[in-house]
Image (cartoon, rainbow, N blue to C red; front, side):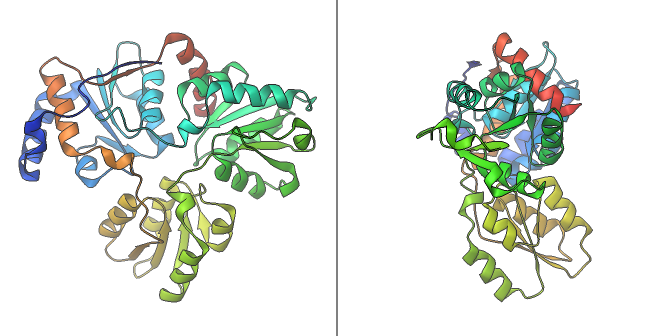
Amino acid sequence: MSVERGIGKVPERYRHMRMEDLVRETERVRARLGDQVAILGHHYQRDEIIRFADHTGDSLELSRKAASVEAPYIVFCGVYFMAETAAILCSPEQRVIQPVIEALCPMAEMASRKQVSAAWDALSTVWDEPIIPITYQNSNADVKAFVGERGGAVCTSSNARRILDWAFSRGGRVLFTPDEHLGTNTALEMGLSESEVGVWNPLAPASPETFSECRMVVWKGFCSVHTGFTLEDVARARAEHPGARIVVHPECPRPIVLASDASGSTSQIIDVVAKAPAGSTIVVGTECHMVDRLARQYADKEIIPLARRECGSMGLTRLEHLLFALEGLASGKAHNIVAVDPDTAAGARLALERMLQ
């Protein structure tokens, strides 16, 4: 991994600008840059960022967009693994900028290539069949590279079932990193039994023999936003909003998914809300910036957060950071360029391209 790090904090003048001034200046410099820049924003970003995004989406949608936009500069408003993915998928001539390069996904930091390689080696001692590694998009480039080099693929919460179907069709067993809950929820919904799904704890690995009968082993990683929802939250929503539909993200633990009416990726949740008839009440269990935005966008429906859970990493990016990044590009001084070393990028690209095929 190679990252050209710019100024860690924006200059003083940006921090003291009023929001209306930030908006006006961002509009000005954005217009000046024209088609030289494409701004990508994940659904969990703040409204002040989303209003300037040329493209919004979940991880899968933004991966596809990063591979297809033609602007010389891609400004990615999200967390680091997303900007890394954009840098891997875009053309060599393009540059990816992350306004706050310190915005890391804690889940992605829960699995390193060294740890995944150790798990692979251990499972290889008890599994005769091929091991098909699958990594959630919420992983760093070195893990994606390991997966790609060994014939595996990346998945997102939108396509995890399709990717796991592909993996099992190859006649092997699956090592799934780094989200325990997405992996478990998807596997059980595909018909695997609980005894066929094991959990690998990289901090205290069990004996490989523990997993000899498992068809799939999931990594003990998690999203702090989605594991923060509780059965008490679900019970309270049922009591306070009788007849409401509860929809949660599959990064939630299994009991929360089972207690809800549906689960889906951010884009799938948005689709549920969009298609619900006027007057509907929908309780949504995901990051609160997106839920608040849906409530404003669909004012003819009652959209309520299951509980207010904010992704601190996504929330790090504010308008002053985006403005600083854009003004840097306009003056020929790009800050926070995200790059991935060629060998790592080559392996990671294989895993990403298998997902996108």
